[in-house]
Length: 306
Ligand SMILES: C[S@@+](CC[C@H](N)C(=O)[O-])C[C@H]1O[C@@H](n2cnc3c(N)ncnc32)[C@H](O)[C@@H]1O
Image (cartoon, rainbow, N blue to C red):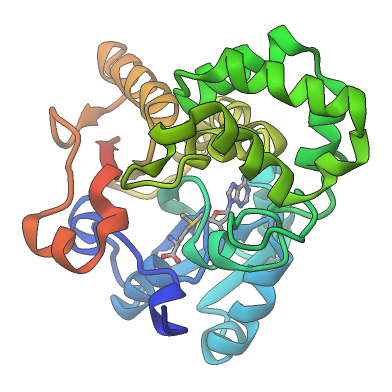
């Protein structure tokens, strides 16, 4: 794989622009900046962006790639968990007169994060520490979790967050390995081998056998679902308190757990007449996009207007 194909490609860009509808000189929050693919397009419309990402590497890269927009204050970049967006906005409001016209979330991890060889996300980097923190300020790495959690909890977690049908057998094997040599669980390769051993011949499918196990661990380590659950009501409040007209909340989810939270929250917004769903059903990638960006296959976009 060449270097470019490892770079994050933003998904559903046209659809995000249609639903978020960015207007010149109005402020939008990009809660999950990543490589800034969506922010770039919003900025190209002449809108202003306040962007969050809790991954220091995303922020450092953004400082290089978006220096012009940062220097001209068209882009305000914050290394912060999006669940702190209210506090951050209050701070910004001390020096800026800003009303938020839209908030956008593109949940999960970027390709850059998943493909980086030294963060424990990549199955190929067998000798690396099984870390998986997107924000290195977080206390618990994936390997710490495997050393702490009991077998039942572990199996439940692998099933609920990864949809892993072999969750019980994998959890059992992890505990066996932990009893013998707990520190071996520090390495990516040990977990990959455990999943391979459990799945045997069934490990030879299209996707890597350890994909679901790794996804579950990543979600827990980064508190992904709690962050979404906590932040959606905060984002709504920001929009309700804003004096902007035609305000939008747009989310892209990649797995069922994320999408369920968004769908339920947006239904409540509509049921209580706070806002209206822009599309009744989730928007998914077109055939053209699927052909050039396979990662877009599981993306589901939902949007509300206030
Ligand atoms: C799917 S990527 C976003 C890609 C981006 N839209 C683009 O076009 O490049 C998700 C990004 O959100 C960040 N992220 C995930 N959860 C976060 C949170 N709770 N607070 C701040 N950033 C978060 C990740 O570090 C990652 O860079």
